[in-house]
Image 1 (tube, rainbow, N blue to C red):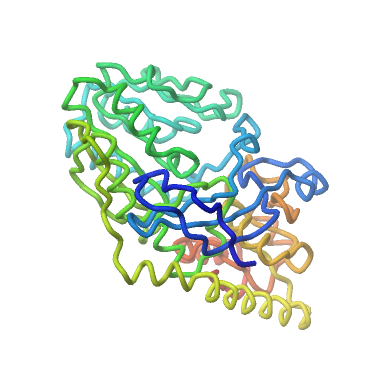
Image 2: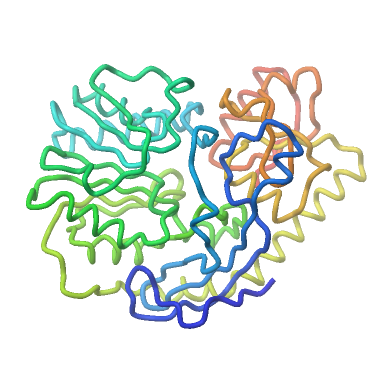
Length: 394
């Protein structure tokens, strides 16, 4: 449906323009990472509305229909990616690069939204550092054991958690969940105080990729904020940080910033987005609807041919994809390598999450790969299992 927006709502990042509506989707699951134990609970999960608007001044995209009261993160939440060998290699390289670039050795590291503490533990192990993470979903009972020099606190981060000892502050895939991202960054800057050598590493999904690949599965309720390079730069610099590096990574799926504290500016100075990007945003609704129709038609053809179809990857992309298509029966299983997800059911549409070896006794004809970056890894796993299936990337 066409977005209606929230007339008069100012951009939460630069505050220089009203948000302009461009895309809406009603009744999407409010959480993509909840581990639902039954199909009934998964289908009956809490829902909210996507009503996306964009800022013409900085390119920030925001869900104007977001209600923070519908989002709560606890022990039943798990969106870990590090069970993939491809993602493990990415994190290993990232941790080593941060250590080498900024000499993070025998240092104090703070991570906001640390999940199980896996990446924090990696940075501390490689650099012999001390680490403290903060995450309300941390579950010590199911998490991997942490090195002695690492602890994760089971609570939300606040400015008091960053003190003068923090040499590196890491915040990966958290800012997009925050309805006031600029305010969070300002609070973080205040917490760092006068220490000018603290390094900040931020990582968020690349909003441009979703817009240009028409990846409707990347549009989820949990992500109230979507960043282009222009809006991420604006948010970071206006909070009082000097950007040392801003780059795309992970096949263009992530945007990252490395920064150090500087003087807080008197007023935000928005970085204007490329005019072509604004054109992509304005055309997104029409083009995305056509893409959804194409996928629905393909699944209908496969069902008519009695083709057994499974999906691979029970994360955000799968939840977004199946919910926008309304698919509940044509694809009834989703494979995931995360053992905590296996035996649970996908939010909103209720597909059973199964381990890879479940395909051996009940092989599919087609495997839908939710994230194209994992296609080679998944193809190899299928070959190792002796499963001969057509691999189709979404």
